[in-house]
Image (cartoon, rainbow, N blue to C red; front, side):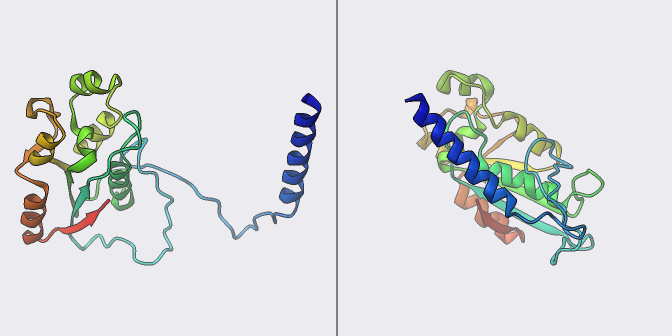
Length: 190
């Protein structure tokens, strides 16, 4: 049995070496990705592309509401929708600061509702620290306003007193998103 494993490992290694030998080296004009999180440290990494089309216009005022309904794959993982909100903050940020011309609102509901539980409630329910707590703090510090659907709190079996202090409860996600649309916010579902 060990001979077979060694043989399989040797063949795999041989294949990888042959494959790598066929991969051309990057020319001087080609640049490798440089992942960075200039505003929301540790989340929403971006690859700055100063020559790419459709760059954010510093003279334009942007208003966006992110609808985050999908929960993380496990109670131990960061919510991907919130991670993408951090990416947006990082993409629009300038000089390692949030863009002053970007207003972001997040409306959380559905399976994502657990993301807004305070530390004690999350730990009691899932026997783990809330993996979104640090990211939510950093989003708030960057000026992102986070709301949770009051209907989803009840539907999920959570209690209003268990919602984090940096998250505000709204009547309903759909009502909040309609109101924000009338204020000129563009809706993006994550």
